[in-house]
Amino acid sequence: MTEKQAHIVEVGPRDGLQYEQPVPLQAKIRLIEQLIEAGVRYIEAGSFVSPKRVPQMADTAEVLNQLKRHDQVTYCTLTPNLKGLELAQAHQVKEIAVFASASEDFSQRNLNCSIAESIAQFTEVIHQAKAYGMQVRGYVSCVLGCPHEGRIEPQQVIDVAKQLYDQGCYQISLGDTIGVGTANQARQLVQSLSSVIPVTDLALHFHDTYGQALSNICACLDLGVRTFDSSVAGLGGCPFAEGASGNLATEDLVYCLEGQGLSTGLNLHQLIQAGDAICQVLQKRNQSKVAQALRHKINI
Ligand code: HMG
Ligand code: MG
Image 1 (cartoon, rainbow, N blue to C red):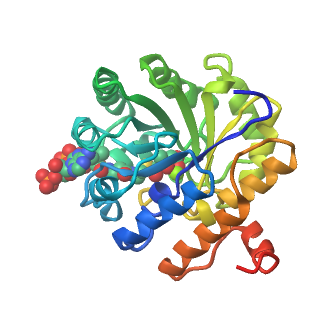
Image 2: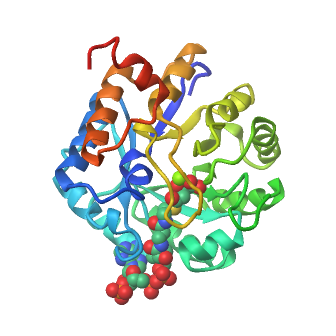
Image 3: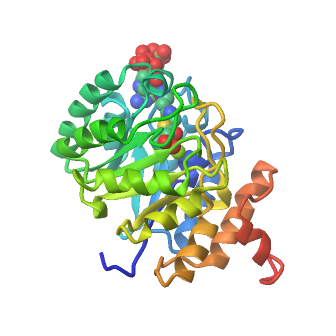
């Protein structure tokens, strides 16, 4: 990875759609295809989780069955347990994500177990995934605040992130699940974590509830973070975190990073088209400010 390249993890088909009304299978597939046409090379295609708890992701196997896969694209799925891992393996998924929390309360709500129990479960998942030759990405949620526990100290995040990293997650994505963090906090967190995990192995996954996501990312750029999670049209949210709203919009992230001389490899106009198309299916407004500003100029 060179200094001037940024890597974008597109979470729209997973995080973006997990808290919306369920969309038809073909609309999901079209969204993924349009994102790839726009240059996306890493995409969260869905989740193998309990279909009763997240019905929006119940068709992940079918999405994977029907997608035309491209060699240069990584299709990742969330897999909280061995059951999810087996489903991922059966559907030729090469990369999975496990997702822990820095907050006990959110761990219980999201995974129905404590942080320690979730780490024990992920140890098995990571071990077996490696045996299958898969890559494993690790999430830590609520890194800058929890809807019930309030402030989360960097040490709480370090404890969880280090365990996932030591077990073999090649990258740790730091989730500000409810989008409450501000720039200094984000920067301090990354600085603290960098004493145990190389900054280049960290990613930032910021929801934009309070409109701080871009400013928080910019505050961490000179520390060397180069991987960012975002969701087209600013879709997103977690059903188990009160007050969680959309992720940072991919269109806004691309505009910001490119403006600072970082190359993303993504085509902004095609991204806007992809975001508008899924928003039309959802019958909601595209939340990206850049999409709103540019749409009339590019005649979409
Ligand atoms: P559990 O609630 O402890 O119960 O599951 P269980 O293990 O007894 O399973 C309940 C039912 O789900 C059973 O079916 C299982 O077979 C089935 P039943 O017998 O009732 O018919 N099941 C599964 N089905 C498919 N795939 C699976 C699977 N596992 C169990 N893998 C579990 C624990 C974690 C599975 C459950 O609580 C769950 O699915 N939670 C939802 C987690 C989730 O998807 N959260 C949203 C994503 S995380 C997020 O958004 C944050 C993030 O974006 C970062 C950030 O923003 O901070 C990543
Ligand atoms: Mg999220």
